[in-house]
Length: 399
Image (cartoon, rainbow, N blue to C red):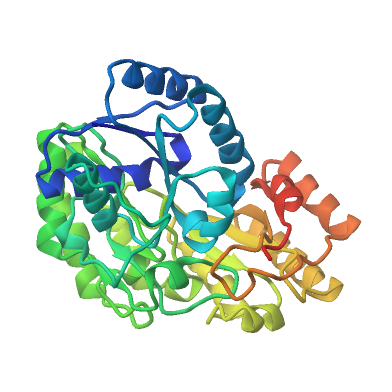
């Protein structure tokens, strides 16, 4: 059986987790193939079918990728018809499974995929393909039960240390997809993974987390002893030739969790001198409306502390949030300008309604010419970046 993962740069971490789950299961008789482009995907599927293998095409994607994935599925069907099975998962598929089935997928996985990919693969190997089109996962997983990547298939990447978030922001899928309780990989598990990466001569370690500084905690009250044990332990394993990146992509940190203590730990053990900070709005009214759980003052404090500790920041801001007024946008523009003066770069977003969130059916607020011109000016000066214009075009509400 061939599992063909459409292994794009944006989705590799998701597939790494699925590969790790399959390796952890000990299943035999399955081969994972990793085409990175649509052309390679088509050629891989053709070669697999020519050998009369059971061929499963796995697609994992988020909402901004829907137009591309829809085209990919249409082209796959035109080439291969129903001879290859298309399995879809990821953030968008979990929240809008009926839409993804209508796009042409054979099966859609809703929720965490590690256990499901193992059960799905085992069923096919035993000649018992699942009957249900929408496969809903039950309960939540213990992260330690699964590798976050697969040495067997050489699928390495960032290590997921935390899954779930207690804040439930109205625009974000994290709490609704993974739960409102933060789940963490244990320290022993993470240290063993660092050892494994070192044996593979992979000496740079990055993490996946909705808030890296909240590792080991309930997500609200920090557990600095757990953070220090993690960073110190991995730093000791890697030695002077290793590098740890903490609080930077593909993680971020909350403004209210940027403190002298968290910055000191990062400075001591990590290589990065840039942090990704989720500010989201410069309007106190909007921060409350979207349930962010921090204040505008927290944003300023985070930027000032970061700059004083030798860090620069990439600050996320979202325009066009439902209910956002011109006054709210002007407040955000002012805060963004102040952040730039403190040495930050702005990661600009336009609100897109995401499935499975309270804002899934909401209409984005219109961006004024003043707002758009401000963002473009920052981008042209190297002070801002992001896919905000593409997101504006894609930001139609899900109904």
